[in-house]
Length: 138
Ligand code: 5GP
Ligand code: ZN
Image (cartoon, protein in one colour):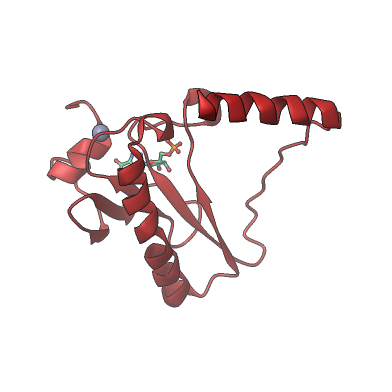
């Protein structure tokens, strides 16, 4: 995918500040960080989003995630850390090469999540669970 900026970061066409790489994944600093230490972890293979991610690759990528989180913790001693993965423009994905954000959280950092729960009836939750389980079993 030659118009993908993250593929270009992996092949070195676009510079990046690397923190980790192995055969399958690459971690680097976000260019517009939301907090000190904001890091992105991506597969080297062009995978658009979580929907397209092979399980084995997801397994490897997530096996690296605790090391990245703990390195950020050691480096900056944040109060907490959000991992975030946006899939699809409707979910605020802006780069269509899968990436997992590591966003360290600090006292009074001003970052907010303003999502409102939808407060469904329990029957709707049960129907939703059935639909998902059916899809998993299909
Ligand atoms: P998304 O909104 O798709 O979840 O997040 C994309 C992230 O990629 C953003 O946080 C943005 O700052 C970061 N980003 C976009 N272009 C570049 C780039 O060229 N270099 C780096 N290091 N990060 C980038
Ligand atoms: Zn790509």
